[in-house]
Structures are given as structure tokens and as C-alpha cells.
Amino acid sequence: MNKLLPIWRAFNLHCPACGKGALYRRYLKPVAVCAACGEPLGEIRAEDGPAAWTILGLGPFLVPIAFMVSMSGAPIWLTLPLLLLGAFGIVLVALPRVKGVFIAVLWIMARP
Ligand SMILES: [Zn+2]
Image (cartoon, rainbow, N blue to C red; front, top):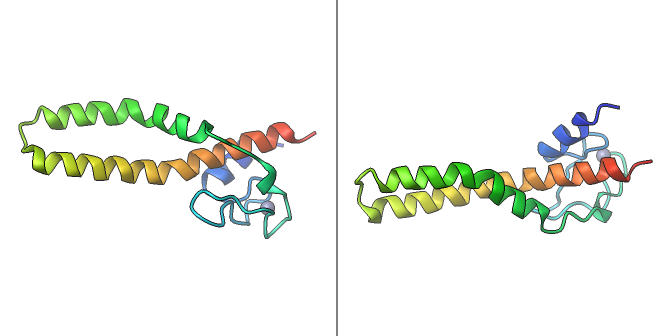
């Protein structure tokens, strides 16, 4: 079986096994079992890995953007809130996807 397909499914917030059921029941809370195929996804513990990899993945992009914006001469009362909102938005969108990839990789490794 192609190992990238479960990772792609989980990146798109679907069950890595079937690609039909939802991966999360809330923002970052995985479902106990997939509603479509019954795969026990709640047993997979990603722990702090997704948060660390999100920071490591987005940091090299966010820091230069913040530096360039701060050097642009725009007023800080305008740039700081925009940078914070932009960074929070990107992190909030990326974190469930990175966690999905983690869950998929752990799911692949746990299979016989
Ligand atoms: Zn499933």
C-alpha cells in the first residue's frame, strides 16, 4: 500500500485508513474510532510532536516576514496586530494538519 496516501488523507483531516471519516471530533481532539471504517484512531497519541513541528516548519517563514514588515517603516500599532493575527491564523490552520500527518505516520508504523 502506498504510504503517502494515508498521510495525505490525514493532512486533509480525514481518517488515514479509509479517507472517508473525520479525523477530529473537535479542533485537535481525534475521534475514538472512525465513523466510516471503525479504525481506532483515538488510541494514537501524537503528544507534543505536532506543536514542535508546526513551530519548526512555520518559524523560518514567519520570522523573515516579521523582520521585513518591521523594517518597512509602517507604524507598529498597525503591523504588530496584523503580524500576530496572521501568525495565529497560519498556526491554527497548520496545527491540525501537522497533527494529522503525525497520526498517519504513527498509524502506518503501528500496522503489522
Ligand atoms: Zn476510517
